[in-house]
Length: 83
Image (cartoon, rainbow, N blue to C red; front, side, top):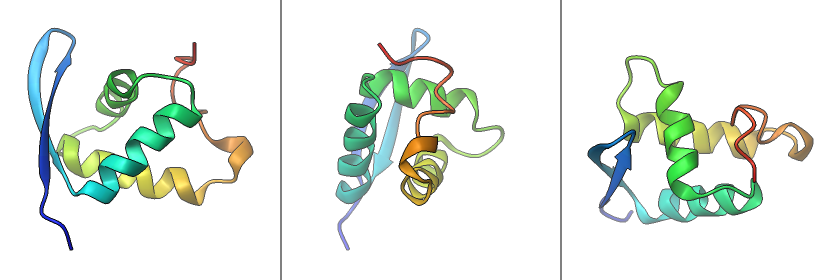
């Protein structure tokens, strides 16, 4: 198991740090590339829908759900953020 790695993001002008293990960062980057969006935009979309959970936890759950969904259903929760 790898140790979590911190990355900083700016979400709606507010700086925040996210700690994820390397495999989750890799999966998140891959999901953003597949959805033809930026990593920051994907993180922002996850942040918008996370409710009361922490952002790092919400990202882990998003990644798990993303790769469980059939290919044709992926990206449906990005709110049209594909460019």
